[in-house]
Image (cartoon, rainbow, N blue to C red; front, top):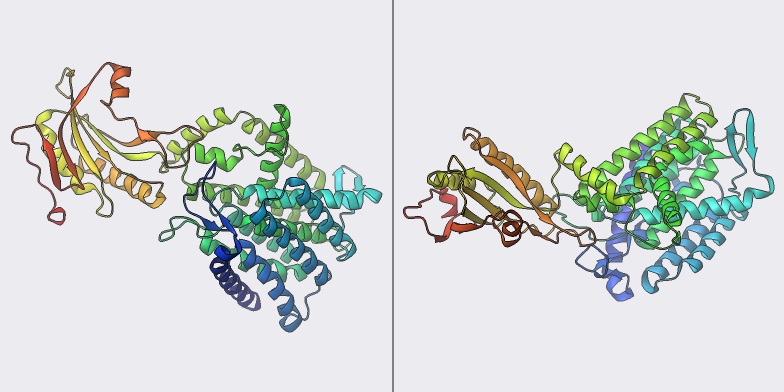
Length: 511
């Protein structure tokens, strides 16, 4: 019960702090403006770290007041490192620091973990049967290296709405399970507090009904802070005689961002580039390029992280030898690296996966129904207009091809809908297409499918026009042209009809 209250309090504290941050963002210049390769279309505050930093401070006060039995590494070390990395990220969000100044501060913060907090990576565990890898004089350099790596892994994961927050929440929950059943119950307090802070951030950052885009971003001030806290937890919990978990378990608990970061950097080196040169070949970028909605990418990434994390948790709790878990991790990473080595090929596979899963695609631009005889057009148009939702505008056109098929089916219907990247609307369109398909199931030979836009890989989500059957591009390709014989807007108002007696019965709600 105490932990549930702690979670609720930290969620509220985070939400309030972020709301205050939103109000101050414009004055402080902490705004991410659209343009360039960015996908968002509105200026958005970089204030996710405000909520997390406030939770860290609040957790230290709550520990002294209500959780006297909690014994963490010196909180002064956590607070100093958290504040330093938060302020560095905030400066970077406003003035855009280069990677070198960021790395210097991250290294100094890692040193503060060692000398102020006593948190140091002294052993990597039994990576080879019968051989425990103790680091000796390499302990401090590898502590710095591991901390910088985790900070930047979370930072690079922060690419689309809800991804870094959801992934972090999953990893924290799994880490809490390990801490509870391991020897680290004292760390459960900090983990639950951070979960509340991340949940408060996700309220503003996730896409869900009523929140079609993120209202705040995590920013470098938030992602770097999260990475530092993960580094602190993982190193502190995996070292010493009373360690709560093995170092290898930590790899599995944050497997997806670690594999994605290392894999992308190795790929850049593989093709002769700089490992620090940004590109759009992270796994979440490839999912979006393949047409997945952002909310679906977040869900799939969360599922992947749960599966990876559970492998680590089960391996630890069941006592699987560390070296087996380590080499299994390397094997999974090797497969992952081979898969992402050719992004264009992977995008093609992901498009097939999207269709196989039956998920809506961000490239949806409407619905296609065909082919039918001309005299059946009014009946089918009526079915389509009744099957479409009443919450969006659309244009419905009936086209006749200039080349008849053997059975006279040379007419088709196209419903064009301006989605503007609205993921909830795209889901509604898919639902309506299925409804229309069910209603005309008794009509032999009729095809109902979603109409897709054609976008270049580098265009923003939501860009691109559909390749309509009978359009100039399609006509040039197939040598078949089509003539518009009837059209309506919003499913109720006829605009043009060249078919004598073409009368359509529409629902009373459209009149």
